[in-house]
Image 1 (cartoon, rainbow, N blue to C red):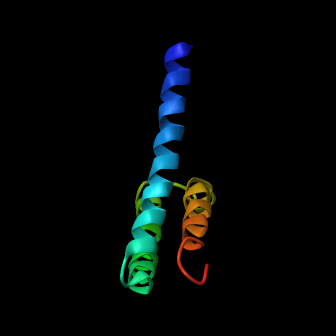
Image 2 (image 1 turned 120 degrees about the vertical axis):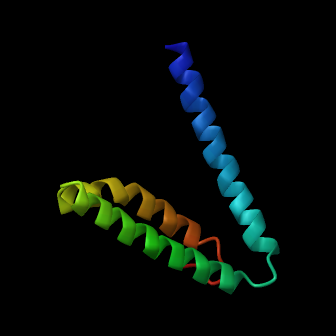
Length: 86
């Protein structure tokens, strides 16, 4: 059980550090609007690829939405890091 707790703790720490790094990179980038546009484009590509993979593997649209929901929620949170919010 201790190994599991340590693994979860490490994942949480990594997540916090990634958020901080993303905030720092956006805050110091000379063109945050371009970073935001690139992020939105990559997110759109990811969503299309996930849907294509789900379809090809026989997954239901509902199961793909369930898998993607946490990713999209986090993406929306990251969008607030850009000047002007989401």
